Image 1 (cartoon, one colour):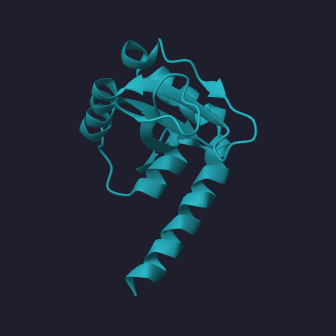
Image 2 (cartoon, helix red, strand yellow):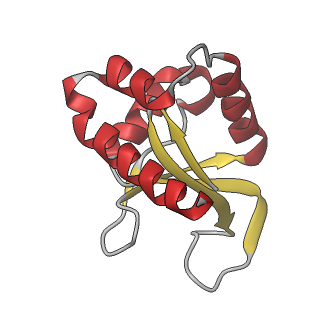
Length: 123
């Protein structure tokens, strides 16, 4: 699943068993949360230190997502539930602009592009 938050963009999938190498079976109890930017995963860890403190951000060369962290599926569910509970805005892109300010300008711009692509799908 793709998850866009004011903290950043994440792609969350089941991790593979063991070291997570390709062609390993899926571990249905563990998630691999991937990001394009290390700062996005670090922001998520800072927001949820009690849940993600033990989850190191791993940089991966030569993969489609530059960074990832591994977390128990039950813990990931708690993170997602907390993100829902803290939602207090009525316009996501505006919230990102306000929350991240200038450092988040590239992310906000990318969100507008994604919005446009999905808008065209609707038509």
